[in-house]
Length: 207
Ligand code: SF4
Image (cartoon, rainbow, N blue to C red; front, side, top):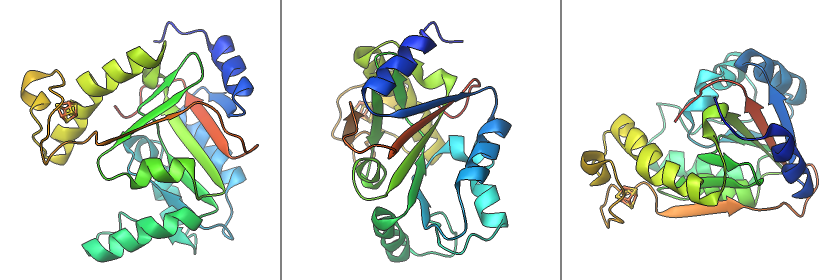
């Protein structure tokens, strides 16, 4: 699936103080999270197909975790949803995926509004990036290419948005109101131990 060297990836994440675990399938990652999350925790997440595909959000909801910050609750109005997104900054755990991780140990994300990428850097006590093997690329340039010439278009279509790259399939560095890549983050290292965790799954998940 990926031509990247997983041993080198593990070494680079270790060097960057980022915890790294690899799983054969999404069932195993769900089992791991079941062991590591508990009902005393306040748990939040950023928008992610991968979390849905792994059954993680269904699990948290069905087990009725009492302190969930469920930004996707359909009963919320816009203001209530933003309030939940703000609450995520004081969560014990923040779950999300990554738009790309690189063999040299970087975690790269984009965001239209910024709440998701901001929480990965500061606020929540612990962050889990749940990532399918399709997101693993060689280096930063490959990550940006993947994001701007593939990920954005797929997500724009999914969300019913029409930035110009949906038609051209190539980034136009646009100023569209539908732009999904207003904010870019690259996590190069974490100065806090046991905060940033990458859970890589040997499957294609999300975009
Ligand atoms: S800047 Fe605009 S054209 Fe380029 S990837 Fe982002 S949304 Fe698409």
